[in-house]
Structure formats: structure tokens, C-alpha cells
Amino acid sequence: MEQPIHGLDSVKEYYGKVLKSSQDLKTSACCTAEAMPVHLREILRDIHEEVKDKFYGCGSPIPHALEGKTVLDLGSGTGRDCFILSKLVGPNGQVIGVDMTDEQIAVAQKHVDYHTKKFGYSTPNVKFIKGYIEDLESAGIESSSIDLVTSNCVINLSPSKERVFSEIFRVLKPGGELYFSDVFASRRIPKELAQDDVFVGECLGGAMYTEDFRRMMIKLGSLDYRLMSRNKIALLNADIERAAGKIDFYSMTVRAFKLNLEDRCEDYGQVAIYKGGIPNCPNLFVLDDHHIFEKGKPMAVCGNTAMMLQGTRYGEFFNIIGDTTKHFGLFDCGPVSTLNQTDSNVGACC
Image 1 (tube, rainbow, N blue to C red):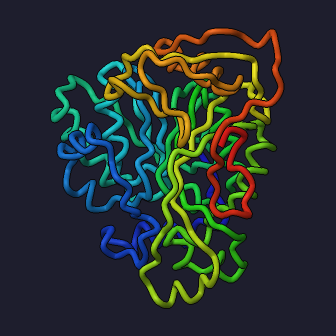
Image 2: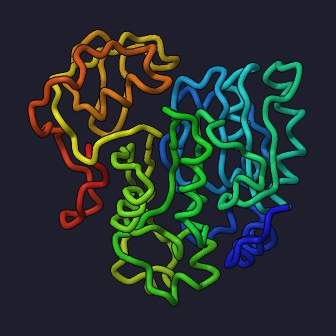
């Protein structure tokens, strides 16, 4: 039996007792309106209204090419993203949601049969486990068993973020992907705000300072992760905005792979060509905020990007020309995406 993680009692109270629906949130941090892709909006129409009403998320962290894959959603809540993923992985795939809040898990489990029938499956392909995202082993998630780990505005709530990311890379298969949305901050959060129940519950008190996130990922061996999107959060509450002061908060979607990557973008003269075939990506595939592959068009890439396309589930959809036998120095990877002009790169290629 897993042991409670110290510092989570107030989060359980906030999401299990205080909030009755997304309308009860005081800021937009946990429900940032990021445009959902058309193919996901179509699936969303089939999701039960109670599941949607009690959803708290800050992005749309659902990537492509998931048919038949095993997906783990951290902090799955009422299961909105899990049920969307259930449709995307198909009857031969599996979706696992982990959440620590009894009230949220109860709503999710109540609607498993509803979505199984709605999607035309003979048996459920989604299950929900009560547990802590800091201790996935106790939740029964085996090492190297997951194709994709996703999370939607939840990791900020954890007081032990390094444990969370360490567990993520433990359970991912080689070449597996982490794709998550969360709240990040332009500065470190002062102690008094980091311990304030409302600030924490509103996904602000535990927001990760971007540079501390970068350092932690390097420590855990993830040397190159990619930024997908970034949106500034409107706090929409005078008292909270006054307390936050000059700290800016952003909803960001990030992807990382369990690969042996380099800490800088190196040039090996490689070229990537998108062959097409990824569902809902007939003409373009977006790897990150500045790597957009047009079908049939050769594109020079760094060694890390080549590996992300070749050594993952995306490999069957790409032709990679060249290898790493000859080195040409650093690769000019284009624009830098940062929170502000003084921030360092979000990742080696970003």
C-alpha cells in the first residue's frame, strides 16, 4: 500500500471538497483556454458532461500516433483526457489514469462503461488507479511499460516534483514520450505563496520556475526537451494578482523522450523527410514550436531531432538520411523560445 506524500492534504481538500466544478476556480491557471485540435474537439463531444464539468486542466497534452499504445495519465481527475485517449489508442491500446483524490476517481470510474459503449468497444480499455504520481511503483506501474506519459496541469501540485519526473522516466519504455501541460513561473515562488492553500490549489504556488525545471531535467538525464506552446495566464483575481506581484505565470506544453540525447544540438548533416501517414497530420507534422515537417519536403535536422523522429513511435513515418559518423559542429536550430528575454533556452533545441 502506497504511503501518503507529505504536503498533499491541502490539495486533496481543494480538489475533493472545495471545488465542485471548474466554475469554482478563482483564476484561469488550471483551465487555460488553449485551442484544442479539431480531431480532439470531435471526440470531446462524446465525453460525458459530468466528466467535462469537473475537469481542471491548462492545455491539450495529447500527441499523435497513439493507436495500440499504452498511455499513462498522471493526475487523471475525472478522466476527461483519459477518455479522449481511450478513443485514440483504440480497442487494442490501454489507458491508465492515476489520481489521489477519492471524489475525482469516483466520477471517472462511474463513467467507464458509458464511454466503452460510446466508442463501440466490447471491453473497457481504460482503468483508474488511486495512487500518488510520486510513487507509481506502489500504484503498480512497472518499469519500461508505458509508451506515453501525459499530464494536464497536475505536476505543479506535487511537493516532490523531482520524484515525479524520476518515476516518469522509470516507467517509460526506451523511446517512450512524456507530453504534458503545466504551469510555469518566470521567477521562483516565495515561500509564503508556495505554502498558501489557495495559491497551491489554483496551480500557482507550485508552479515550476523554468530554469529550475531545466536543471532538474538535466539532472535526470533528459538533456533536450521541446516546447510545444506557451500562453501567459490571466489571474483574473485582484487579490491573487496583487500577491503574485511581478511573477508571470505561463501555461506551457512540453514534450520529452526517453532517449540518449546530447545536451546541445549537433550537426551530422542529417535530413528528415515526413512520409505522411500520421492520423490527423496529412500534410504537416509538428515536432515542437519550430520544427514543422511538410510531407515530402527534406529538412535539415540536428542529431537529437533525428533521433526523436527515428528512435520513437514516429520512426515509421519518417525517412532519415545520414547518420552520426561525421560531425560538422553545432547545429543552428533556429529561433529560441523563452519566457522572457533574460531566460535561457527551454531546451537544447528550443
